[in-house]
Image (cartoon, rainbow, N blue to C red; front, side, top):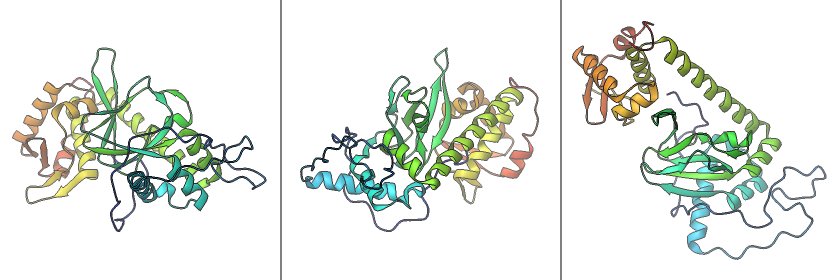
Amino acid sequence: MGSSGLLIGGDPEGAPPGRAAAYGSPPPGSETRGSDPSGSRKFGAPTNGSPKPIPPPLRPADQNAMTETLWFLKQCDLFRHLAPDEVAALEARSRSRTYKRGEPIYLPADQANGVLVLAEGRVKIGSLTSDGKQSILAFIEPGELFGELSLLEPGEREEHAEAAEKSTVILVPSDLMTALVERNPHIAYGVTKLYGLRRRRIERRLRSLLFRSNRDRLISLLKELADQYGEATAEGVKLRIKLSHQDLASVIGSTRETVTILLGELQAEGKLVLGRRKIVLTDPATLEASGNGESGPNN
């Protein structure tokens, strides 16, 4: 699952102070409508001509939460070159929340009221089939956007997002994000690129489901995971992402039982070593060469 989002660049210095607060509603009068041709209205100010109310002083805990949220957002490539007033609007209106492993971030039919940025942890995006089975569409890494379809199709979400491990997520309201896209060509380009990369990923997954066997799909997934999460060890390439057999099955459109059998076969062939939620590819090149067939989706 190659990274398709806008990743945090480099290793930022320092650490964010405090712990993030839960999501909250934007302050009254803070709706964003994009830039003002006259240049007389401050970005993020109300459009009804009334003066923007002065918010009450922040408590220390609120200040820490907002400072941490801004710290995370500024590490995202997408927001690095914003004007000071745009940064101020982001800080004032974005909200962060930390989720436990397995906790849903949003569900189908939830209102799509913003774009989300993963600050820490890992998130999986999935959907449920008509017979109740889960299909994992993507894994989101720190610095990536998700829920971005709210910019194109406001309304209800169609997929679900779940914390694959303890994760901190930042919500950027849709109207604010739309205004940033309208004012900043590099953000518009970044979001467009994100749409394209994720569409290509889905098309590749669809071709795999239609024309490749379960074994080939599993080998292809293991190779993708090694490219993105691989760590060289004495045993081989260890996958730093911890996935259950059910997770792997949900990605390739198979069953847990089938994945367990296939992993056992690959281990018997000496192509990988299995442990508790651990996979080590002993020879990725040989593994890839053994999975180049296209013998049909059900083999």
